[in-house]
Length: 278
Image 1 (cartoon, rainbow, N blue to C red):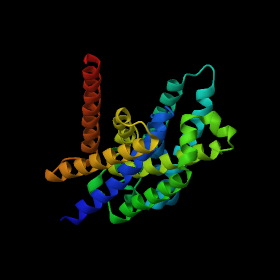
Image 2 (image 1 turned 120 degrees about the vertical axis):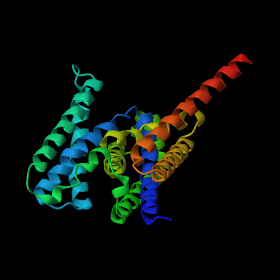
Image 3 (image 1 turned 30 degrees about the horizontal axis):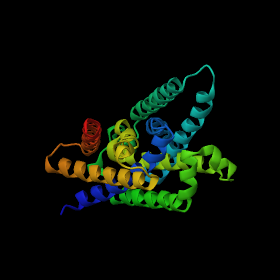
Image 4 (image 1 turned 30 degrees about the vertical axis):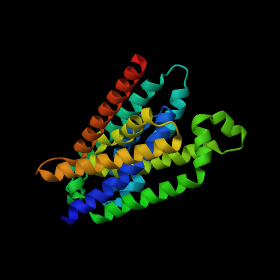
């Protein structure tokens, strides 16, 4: 079996599974588009980190990208609370503004004679086939880090997601949970961008929980279902893209999720109609 295919498949499964897990709290808290904001806000930090250091190392680019993504999330909260600014308007301004800034910085960088900047534009659309094993191990490490932070706090997360006021009354540090979720989203999206690109990364943080939601009634079931669906879509997209030359991996993963979502809700509506007719 092709070594590059194995590496891409491993990296995509871990990142897709992590995105599926994080899609659950985003869906339950009605913050699904936060992933879209993070994906677009990564670009200026990524390019800025390279401009400052001149080094195209994953760890350095990751730190710069996560920093600007976290700043964007911090700016979103006060804008959404402003009485004269609607939530979707604040989100649209930040998404378009961050992406425009990133593209502008990237265009400036491409006009320089620095040959090492070649390849940074692959973060716009992703390039799973160009991934190296170092980036795959980064994906595995981030998966273990975030899941390791979630497991000891499952009960606190469950109460916070369904009844935040009750969580505060019981002394749960909801501020720490919210900051941890933000950092986890930033890290997960940063890795997903390398595989599927900025444009499609947000789909990994929206679709999995949306597909599983009609069929489960518990938080644990929703987490397992979203993670399994996302991992299966990653494997499906990888397999299809490697069957034919020129087939992009990222779009096939997102297209697989779209097909699963259509089937899920078609079956759910058919089930409702059947039981109402009885």
